[in-house]
Amino acid sequence: MTAHARLSASGAHRWMACPASLTLEARYPESSSAYADEGTAAHELASMALEANLDADAYIGRVIPVGDRQFTVDEDMAGHVQTYLDAVRAYGDGHTLLVEQRVSYASYLGVEIGEDGFGTSDAIVITADGRELQVHDLKYGRGVRVDAEHNEQLQLYALGAFDQYGLAYAFERVRMVIHQPRLGAISEWDCTVEELLAFADSAKVAAELAMRRDAYNPQTGEGLRLQPTEKGCRFCKAKADCPALAKEVANTVTGKPGIDDIEDLTQATADLAMTYSDALGRKMQMVDLVEQWCKAVRARVEAELFAGRDVDGFKLVEGRRGHRAWRDKAEAEALLKSMRLKQEEMYDFSLISPTTAEKRLKDSPRRWVKVQQLITQPEGKPSVAPASDKRPALNPAADLEDLTAATPVAAGVHPFRDQYQGALA
Image 1 (spheres, helix red, strand yellow):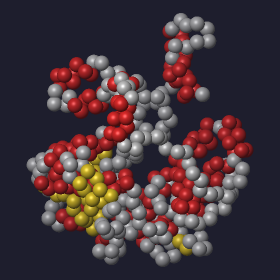
Image 2 (cartoon, one colour; image 1 turned 120 degrees about the vertical axis):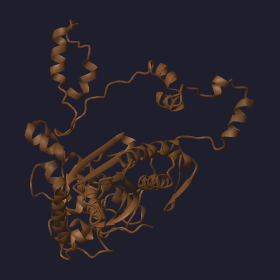
Image 3 (cartoon, helix red, strand yellow; image 1 turned 90 degrees about the horizontal axis):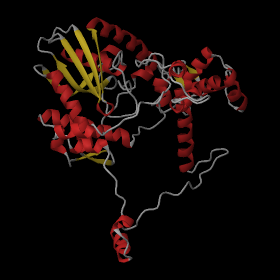
Image 4 (cartoon, rainbow, N blue to C red; image 1 turned 180 degrees about the vertical axis):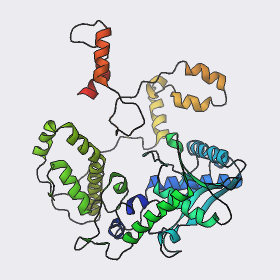
């Protein structure tokens, strides 16, 4: 099993913002999920292909073990990993490309080398002129889009790479690139070496706080302040038991600072209708964090009950039964045939989707162009996003007014009502 540093780069966004979280999380065992293990398998595939100078489809059918799970490389995984391979090879063309490099940034954090402050960079590129250092990171998940700008994980990897290769090259700039092929996204950010070293100073201060023995005492609740954030709490193992997060949730829901318990949400829910725009915006900023806490508490209660421990007021019950399925498809098929059912009565036939058609016609661009003419794709539905989102803002109310003025329609009826009624409800 791969060793994990306490001051891990992947957790830096958490322990830098909330130093006491390192102590609070220490009570929980290391665990993984099928999604995380699948990502590990994809990383292994990418590493093998880069080192062997092969394309990902050369490994289709290969079984990659990860912990107790096994993943078979299929066309889908190979396709996404190939997107990453193509991009990294383009960045590295004519330059030095290093794959799966273990780097240590411990010296910049002021901790002992070997125990803390290390990690593995998926790919490092050193430009031919020796002036630019690149750090590339593959993120195989499809759930959360990650931005490279000021990304703590990549900056720590960059520090480790700079520590390892800085004496041999006169680096001037550092480029950090996050590849998320399943989201069709590449995020890139670069900075000067001086800016990277300035980040190292901030990281060192946070590391010193996080490593203090008195950072947090779970029994007394004393120590450094726990600081809940949407980004930091997302993958924190301790969020179901974090007193600061519970208090933040209660304060957000009730609007009454200092409340530690949520007894009755009826009034809090009713008060939302009277909340002014600025206060409503502040509450909206906390929604993701509140939802994370709810999911974490639910998962923790479920785990306790499955382990045979009591949780006051709750118990395990049998859920809804699953969908019915044939115990033996071949036997069922033979039986139905013996009953003289017609083919259209026995089988469900449906046309392949445009996505499947694109895959099957990928080697025939001219035919694919013809098929594209028969494909339609609805516009995305309006959704709420932070003001910092790069997409342009929509104004459904103004759009409706403009359309009403330009289009004669029956009184009380708008031709585009259905498109916006959900957003205006």
